[in-house]
Amino acid sequence: MNIEVVLSPSLYDGRATKQHHITVAVDILRATSAICAAFSAGVDEIVPLDSLEPLAQYSKLGYTLAAERNGEKVQGATCGNSPTEYLTMKLDGQRLAYSTTNGTVSILRAAGSDRLFVGAFSNLSALAGTIAADPSHDALVVLCSGWKGDPSLEDTLFAGALIDILGRRGVDTTLVNDAAFMARELWNNAAADPYGYCRNATHVHRLQKLGYDRDIRWAFVADTCPLVPFYDNGKLRINV
Image 1: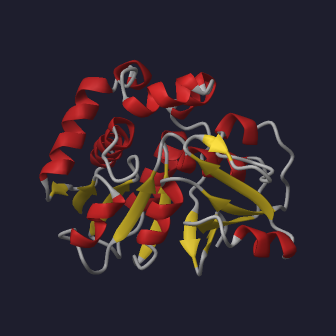
Image 2 (image 1 turned 90 degrees about the vertical axis):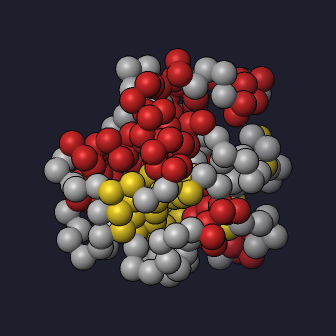
């Protein structure tokens, strides 16, 4: 499998891998971690949005509003993008209209992929198993959300973790760009303590100042939500 890592949504259109590929969109802090947590809490579907304007219309359709900007819940939304908050909520059967600063932008940027999955440390093993079991695709793009166009350490680290686990599961991997090599090297250095390795990351500091240290620590723990959200016709689901 050829693996390309794209460090920011702003770089996605210039990727080398153009056709017939799987994309994994990742925003460890915190959108994709929160998506996995929301499905674990019983959510039925999530509509990712890259702006706030459609939220009012989705509210009229009975959707629960979930929105974040610059790390904080948007006024009027029931949920933000705190994974630990989702895990305390009763959301069985609910539908979310979900907009975040970075993560939903990445998901929608990659909407034309053959298959589009949501990745986080919380679903790392389940995601790797799904990718490894798909013989119909020989190319993977890991799209890191970063922060407002800049790369982020935590998302790049996740890309390296995914490369590592796919290799350990017997997938014959070929890294096709320097970002993929960088991600793998970062993971080799950080695997023993991902949270500790990222303690000086800018978004870690940003969220700590907002009081979200619990979310940060949770987001670096592997396999707490063993499910694989996928994008289909404008919605994220976990069941085919």
